[in-house]
Length: 309
Length: 272
Image 1 (cartoon, chains in turn orange, purple):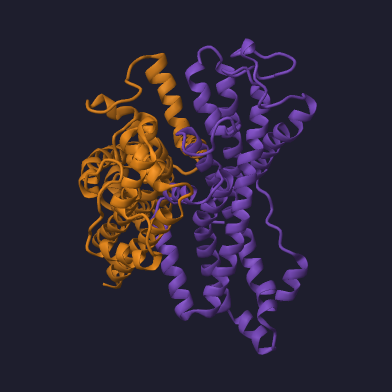
Image 2: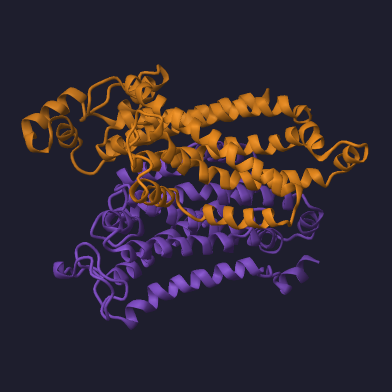
């Protein structure tokens, strides 16, 4: 119960923080926001003072600050995110449109990382210090030291440009998923594998594990009956914390591969100072983290009832 | 007992992997600091006649698409990001240390508010915060410093707070307090020796994160602006020409990898 309350408090803080930050951003942007927004709407060659004034009047860009902040946060409480300053469409519609593309990419990446990482980690953890364990340690340390955009670059150069097996960028067909999701999955799997390996090594060293084998279970049976559930607890906990890494990866990977998702939209919104879009996307990402971790709290409680006590 | 500990100044022994990390960082630092002294050159000087040409005496790593020496651009790029990263880590470390100690020592509302703030920041992707700060602060380098400090202090805060709470509850601190020693003494003798080894790990991770973030945003054209020599920017500029000048692209890639691997190895295991 207290876990849910603390997650609610966290969600509230996230909303206030983003609301205030985007408001300050709106107010303190260097340069004239009206000109920027007008340029975003009509193109850089078609902007003049009249267009900028029209935008300023329409959006109420000049007025007292403290009232505006209260109004700004009030809009937030009523879940009114306003319209995008660039396209004029409601922010909610824009985000709903982009969230699907990002969520599907992130989901494929997480599943792919779970296929790659934990099985290798479990095999390595069953034989600590073995050949696989040492190879995995070197590989995962190496991958962790490579920024995701560099993984993307290497994959593009080898698989798309040199071998011409896969498209370097684009969105739509299933084959477009492979490179971006593989980029994300490799980074996640490098960490997943280590977590699974450490958990497996710890569990395989416990008395109950030796007892299970002593009473005649094969290694496979011991693993399926007694191992997997125990390994899954730290793995799932860590998955929640990795959500932030995943989102950061999504921001970069979407920009590199031209994926029409929320990360790509966020970068563009910040670039063109589309503050309502920045606020909307940031809120979705921040509250998404809280939501995912609240779900994970509940899942952990189900998997490991000891934590509820 | 604790007084003796201080005089002995417990220095964590450097493991083999950490030593490899130090060597890697030292190699990259030598390239960036000494390289331009040995081979003189200008990272901004263009010569389109030499565009994408191979290495020669004036440019040991060849030329980029505008005929600028890749060697000198790389050397300057390898100064820029680490300097910003170190400045941000120091600011974040100082802020995290001060606020974490304050939070653990005072408790109550101060503690609750700081923890709520840290939890909220933890829910936001670092790159998002950095991008927002970059949009607010004039000057890209200054924006990176401010944004990275804002992202990185949370880790220092959490580590310091947890360790300090534990230490403050220990019998040793109670004894010190009963003997009449003040807060500064307790911090110096009891708390700092507990935190110091963790700080190295957190600082190395933080520096690696910061360098990665600067390079990643440069790579997607929202960080440092051309013609500044910056690691991510160099890579994305040279990517289209990698067939003609593979060495020019490989040089920043390998240097970044070596630097980040060095920092990761220096950080060691998160558990220490």
